[in-house]
Image (cartoon, rainbow, N blue to C red; front, side, top):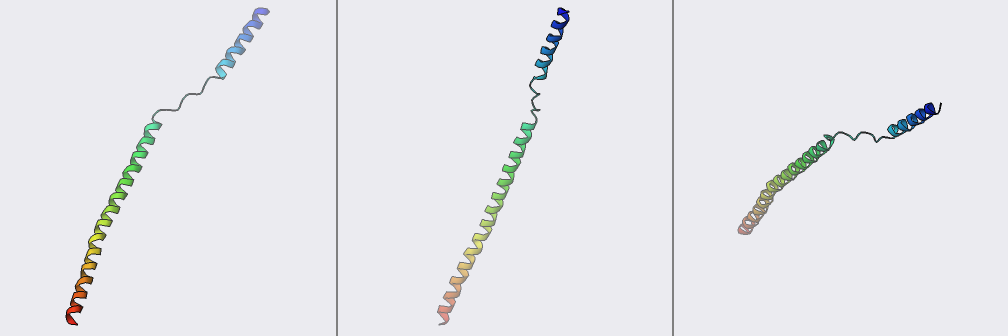
Length: 81
């Protein structure tokens, strides 16, 4: 009888140990997916910056041309007067 009780208590202890085992770690491919998402965000940000630079560059000559035309208009008015 004592052997039976010893076997049962040993079984309970072993079951308790396995029940408290740490869960499996998540799969590692999730980390590269985050890295890829960050790369995509950076690429999108670079594209936006490049587009903004192009818009600025396109706007600068327009500003210069308006200044030039304003100066030309003043000169012609001065000549007429």
